[in-house]
Image (cartoon, rainbow over all chains, first blue to last red; front, side, top):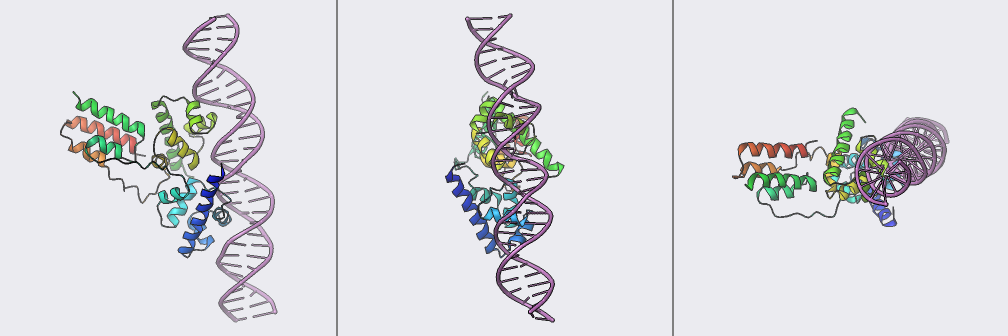
Length: 117
Length: 117
DNA sequence: TCTCTGCGCTAAGTTTACCAAGCGCCCGCT
DNA sequence: AGCGGGCGCTTGGTAAACTTAGCGCAGAGA
């Protein structure tokens, strides 16, 4: 864990605290909503701990924000949000965010096996 | 952590192992790519441990898939955005004039096998 | 044959996320 | 004045994530 990552985690804490205060929630209130102990949340907000994805998701839901946004702030998402143009089965497959690269290749291979004949 | 979650984590392990084998990677190779120890990856694949989001992201990148997909498989994404996926793939398949009805059903079955939790 | 290398797994240890108990402070009561 | 309750924080402790060392097996050469 290098110090660039530390900065990211610190920002995450500040981000959570800012959102919590924006929602007019006390530390204890948010802790209960997010199903974590209040001391732990305190330490997370000050950047002492790196919360797990599970906790991150609960905090996000408690703050009425998407888990993706939370992961983004935590630096846990890919930057490669590369999307292509939509047309036809192959492109729809390539666009689908719920498929892995290998799954996409598998589906496309099967699809071509059906059509190229 | 109730047992419904355990099932999710188990599926995650199987999912990772399947993807790894699809990519023709040995456990040690993927471990190095994902910057984790190979015994740990082994236990993750067998559902003994619940990897942190950090590890999940590294594994996803090593397998050339998006971190979101990984989180989705791990059950770490929002429930309220669970239906947000437009399923453009299924529609594109159904609209494709070059596929027979059986072929469409086959493709959709495989697709759902990939995306369902 | 025997050795070498890579495979997946086990065992034991270290690190770290997370919790329960409790402290000190401030503010609103009476 | 005293007291009660909410605030955020510190302090141990437990459990779980993660690592290092090493086991046994299978296949490939010499």
